Length: 460
Image (cartoon, rainbow, N blue to C red; front, side, top):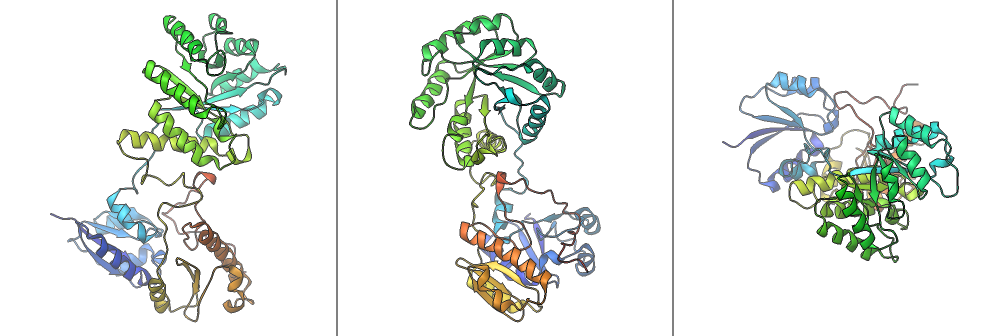
């Protein structure tokens, strides 16, 4: 028997909800109940309890995504599951079709080594602080980046302190003595070991990251892979990823050759040569690289975030590895799953038609301004006026808020957000910050509580 769902909505959204459900032609049956509030976000628990009758014929009740209140209280009262729908009604098909509202990306199969660059000249306290931040952003191993021709007198202390705080540690150096010191002081990994310094492994227990003796020399890498296998030691092999125009394609082929010849060994890829050395936002590069990592079954990546355009690389790589794992596990494309890596755009653009906006305008009976985006412009309206334009300054003379500083300030903020969304083809939702994916950590919101008053709403 088909599920029967009751949708609760407000006056302004009723028509749009009806149109979307009719277009969906869902397998479930449904009823729409408009409960007498103009904006769905203004619904409260008490309003719903007073105005919605208990009806045992429904299997589920769906309320607007912007509702702030206790769902369990409503569930207990109606004796039916009460769920929040999507914040924007245009996402309703996804809500039912893709279960995107319940998907959680929290699994991965690739370690993140996060390098603290130039650690040699940092104090122990500075290194600990950075390590703590990197771990919060998703790092599994803290990589200590040493510097050539620079004494690292406190290397042992750094390793000891990091380990005492529960960090996995790798030493990244071209200096054999520093690698050996790091290994003897308890480092978990050593970057990097080649035929030239392979003897270090006789005196340390650290897991080596094996590299060619010289760039592109796979024969030398294969020799120490076989040698390390005979010793029955754990290791990662790194054929070295090269920058664009300095052998990128050939280096990817080297990873492919090693994986084909040694299907079961662990591999590591240093991805900073692409992110740091390419003038573009790092998020797309990191996502694509983690796709390669997933296909090649590379077990670890070395992430660097030094340049300003790469300052979120750890978070981006963490999210990308989870996205790729989910897609791989479920044998599907990495699309239509999660939008966290879409920082400057949205997969599905939400814009209102002129007809929808005119419908909203005709139903507004108060002086509160609503702001909505159509395909071409920003629309600002209340019961007295309807204005459209593409720049906040287009509206100033006709809003009549010059004697209401708090309202003027509020409209300035919201119109600026709307302008940015219009220019970048992003989604805009009044009273909510724009979404920037991994570029900006999203604030945690307790949806069980009504939002606190903004400073402009407080009584003077």
